Image (cartoon, rainbow, N blue to C red):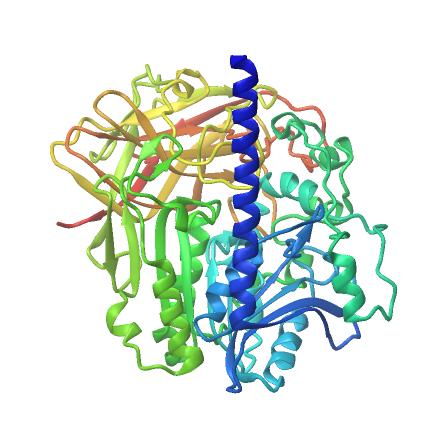
Length: 629
C-alpha cells in the first residue's frame, strides 16, 4: 500500500511540474505577444542572393525603434521535438520591453539559412548586408547594436572594421574565437596558443557542424510554409554522445573527427594550417591591422579560454585606434567566471573548486544603459556612472575599477627560477626568488613522453566536453609527477595583489628537434591547496616568430618568451606564489610529438629530455604585475 501511495504521489508531483512548466512556457509567449510584433522566418537577402533565416521581435508602436542584433551559428528555433522552446522568447521579451527591436539571425548554412557554413570563413559582407537591410526597414531608426557571447560574439569585431554607418555600438562577450592576430598572440580564432593547437575546436566541431547533405527546404518556400515546417522540423541534428577525453587522445590528431564519425570538411582545412597560414587572413577573423570603428563594451572572464588575447585586443583598440572618438568609447568588464558564465555568479561563486565570493554584477543594467546611450541617444550618464575597466580581484573577492588595463599602479616585478637541479615535483627544491641568480647553472631536467602527457586539470578552457573541467582546482596531486618542475616562493610576509599581464621567459634545451614548454601560475594556501590562475604554452620551433620554423640542436640553450598570461588575484599573507613548468597540458593543448614533423599527421612520438636553465647567464624568470597599495 505504501509503495502504491508513493507511486501515486510521484505521479501527482510529476504531473504538477509538467503543468507548471507548460503554464510558464505559455506565460512568456503570452507576455511577448502582448508587447511585440513577431515576424519569424524572414529570409533576409544577401548581396549574392543567399537568404539568411531571421526572427524579428519589435515593440507595438508607430515610432521607429533601434535594433539589438544577434547573429549566431546556434539553433534559436521556437520549436524542438514538438515542444515550444522559451529561450529566444525570454530574450526577446527582455529586449522589446526596453523599447528595442530584437533581431536574431542564423549564419549562412546554419539551420534555415541558405548557403554553406564555414566557421570563421563566412563572408564579412553578410553582417554588412544585414545592417543595411535592417536600417531600411520602416520600423527602424537606423541605429543597430550587436550583442552576443562566444560564437555569437566572434563575428562582431571583423564586421565592426567594415565601419557600417548604422553599426552604432557592440557588446562582444567571451569573444576570443573571433580574434586572429593581436600583438603577441597568434590565436587564429582559439585554434592556437603559442603555436600549439588548442583542442577545444576539435570537440566543438563534432557537436555543431551539420552535414552538407542534410535535407534542404525547397526554393520558393513561403514564410508561412517555413513557420509551419519549423514546428516539427527544427533542423537540429544531434551526433551520438562520445567520450571526448578518449576521443581527443586519438593520433594522428588530423583523424580525430573521422575516428568519431564526425563531419570534417571544415576541420580538415584548419588542422593543416600553421599559425601564420594565409587562409587565416581571408575569413571572418579580426586581425590587428583592421580598424574597429564602433564604440564597444567588452566582457571577458578570468577562466575563459582566451582571457589574455581578449584583454590585448581591448588595449589595442583603446590605445591604437586612429579615431580619438573610438579610443575614448571602449569599456571593459572582467569577471571571475568560466566561458559565458557572467550572469551565473552568486553570493558564493564557485569556479571549479575555489570560492571566489560574491561575484555578481548588474550586467543587464549596464548593457542596456550602454545601448540606450548609443542607439536611443539618451543622456543617461553611462560614462559618469561606469568605470572604464571593471575587474574582479580573486582572493579579496571584490570588484575594482581602473582607467587603464592593467591599472596604472601595477608594476612588473621579476621572480627568478632557482634550484639545486632537482625542482621535479612538489617535493623538489625549486624556488621562486626576487634575488638574481648567481653564476652557477644547475638546470632542472625531466623526460617528456608524449604518450604519457601531463593531464589538464582545471584551467582556462571551454567547449571540450568531459575532457577538461574549467576553473580553479587543487593541483597538489598533479604536482607529484616528475615531469612537472615546481618553483615556489617562501610564505608571503604581507599580502600581494597581482593584477595585469604576466610575462615569462625561459632558457631551455632539449635532445629533441622540437618540443613544447608550459607554465601555470598558482596561488598556494597555507594548508597546501594550490589553485591554478592561468596557463600558457610555447612550441619551441616558433620561438623566433610564427612565420618560420627554427628547430633546436642538442646541447644548445634557447631563450623562449611565452605568450603572456593574465589575472587579478590577491595572494594573502602566508600564501605562496608558485609556477609549474612542464612540456604538456593535455588535452587543453595538443601534444607535441617531439619529432620536428608536422605533428598533425603523426602517430608516433619520441621521448624528449628537456631542461630549464637558471643562472646569471640564463636567468629564467616570471614577471608579475604587482599593484602598489
